[in-house]
Image (cartoon, rainbow, N blue to C red; front, top):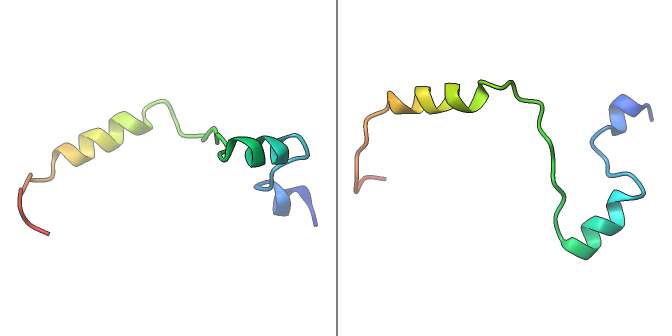
Length: 52
């Protein structure tokens, strides 16, 4: 397998940390404005309470 096919796998140092701690922190590569863009887009939706 190439590194592009296995880039999502944990390395040898990360595996025991995951087993001990039960989680792995992923640092996403979103742009700096990603969260504000999502927030702005969601602000346009109406708020309807009590519906599913």
